[in-house]
Amino acid sequence: MAYRESDTIWSTMHRRRRDEACPMPGAVDVLRRAYAAGTVIAEHRHARHQLIYARSGLLVVTSPQGRWIVPSTRALWMPAGTPHSVRCVDAVEERNLYVSPEAASHLPDAVFAVQVGPLLRDLIDAAELIVQPYAEDSRDGRVMRLILDELTSLPTLPLHLPQSSDARIGPICAHLVRHPYDHSTIADWAKRTGVHVKTLQRIFLRDLGMTFTQWRQRCRLLFALERLAVGVPVIDVAMDLGYESPSAFSAMFKRQFGVSPSHYF
Image (tube, rainbow, N blue to C red; front, side):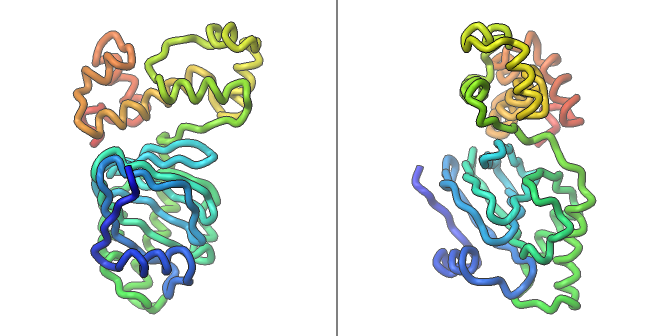
């Protein structure tokens, strides 16, 4: 689908000029954007750090480091200069934060997902109403600093599917992203690729930080999140992924996310 968006605060031209070229008057700023279901934003990067937050809807964000699922209860920290693309699984209302690198030197220089609890959500809502420029020592400045403090205190979440550029496992990963219900074992892949099982196992651990089985389970979980977010029943998602029962799928889901699929969104 062609790129489409609406912005209730700034015109597209003014927003793009501020976001990509001109320095912001404040260390932190919030922009509201709305996207139709199926919208794909081609790979791009920002001069400032970005907190990608969908107030409603579900996003899939892809960068050279991997793939992230971002539901409305989560947000994704995207460091300045990191190339990434975005796909809207359904209609999305975004509240994106843009942060100057100088103001966020204490935050990791890597992509990570965090849970958006009531405090962070309310802070983002309050920040959206702040008029630029604001004084750093004002109430508005304290709200912006509190957002950054809150990000440093939140644990990262398992919403990331790492990728590998190694030609021996890259095609395997790409296939499983497209076909997460494929039940081929690593031994099956060794036969197909002509690469020894132990070599494949070693590359998965080296490049992705997890075993083949762990990576495939993470891939399936993220596929399940996409399906659940658009209203597909738990039983259908479980059957699609080859689980013997919805309870088996729910147990695996809860081990990873701490809640059952029916209570995640």
